[in-house]
Image 1 (cartoon, chains in turn orange, blue, red, green):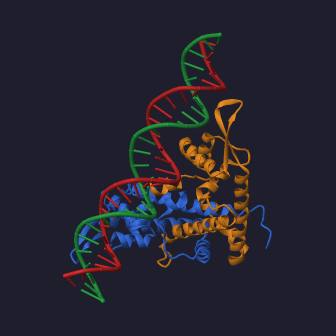
Image 2: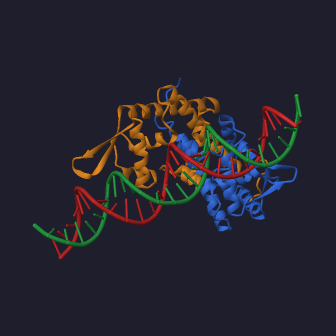
Image 3: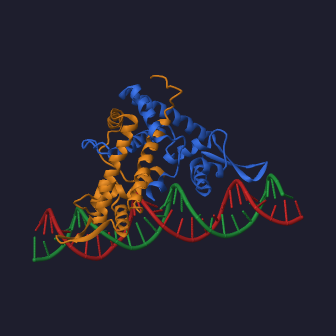
Length: 158
Length: 158
DNA sequence: TACGATAGTCAACGTGGTTGACGAAATAGT
DNA sequence: ACTATTTCGTCAACCACGTTGACTATCGTA
């Protein structure tokens, strides 16, 4: 195995990845707050995305996000409370409670997507578009992930 | 402003950065567990790093990690409980409680650094060394961070 | 000496995640 | 048709981590 370059210690790689992630998320939420969505937390955006335009149930949301149905239920509670999600009964299955986005939820999600596009564009202006493309491609190669796990707080903290 | 490329939506960038971070941290801890440190959580490694070879105090650790002294104290409690840190009185200042690494703490931190080097090496074998260097350089440019904030669970969750 | 600043801890609280248990309702099987 | 099993949602208890506020003990200085 090759000798590690002392000027590029391996522990910096995760720090830089986290810093990049954090920068994007912080910039997103600063702009979202400016556009009328100050209550949205990082977690909420991902949950909203997972609910999607067609809606879901708590159990299904939990599966999509890699957390328990109980945890998903709590997140739904919160997003209902701040006006981003709605709960309704399923006429075809009285056990299920259908979760859908409110107009406010749709607006927040749409703006998030736009802002992320703008942030990526800003990176492309700074680094050059081909560097950003390469960065994405490289991460796809080594991280090879197609889905998102929402258990970040518990995962990181323990 | 340029039009966003529909095949590269901006929201994927943070997802990929998080996936990369998560992959590295998960690989690290899988290997750490194999090498006799199964109790170490992601948070702990960063806290240990911040304590450093010279030791610290709770207040100083909190400042280094961007969290309150109370939160730092709790993390120290935990790391003392699982045998990675020691607390001692400062003979020159009875208010302070000096926090230092135990031999086990030193071992865990040393192994972490080695494993991170190996993981970076693995990325370099897969992507090519120059791509990994470029990835780091680019992230340094757009994220421009020189320190680490440990409040990830609270930051992300709210 | 008296006073302000600092270190550490306790307590209360909020957010998020987990497991276990439960009733209600749908589905499958005899 | 009538059980038996599975599934959905929720409640309760618990843990980890973060926060702010309050308090004691100690240091440093005017």
